[in-house]
Image 1 (cartoon, helix red, strand yellow):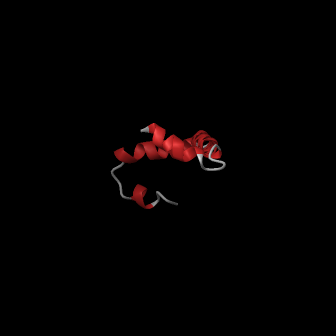
Image 2 (cartoon, helix red, strand yellow):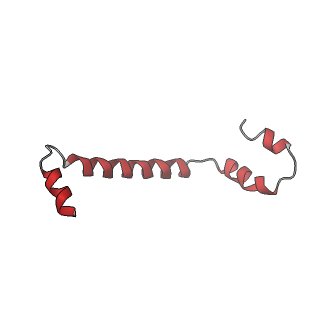
Image 3 (cartoon, helix red, strand yellow):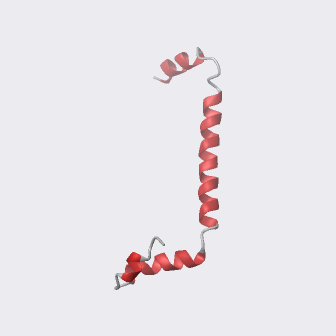
Length: 65
């Protein structure tokens, strides 16, 4: 079955750029995700970790401020 795909892809000019491009997008996505996670504020993480145990509705109204 792979033979059919390989035969069709060999006829396309510049098809070798697509695997490189997809690897680059994959790599950049995870680098950006790691950077975002690493630079996230510790206070905000602690605040969100306490949310499930909070009983007051005040915390929910101030969540996105």
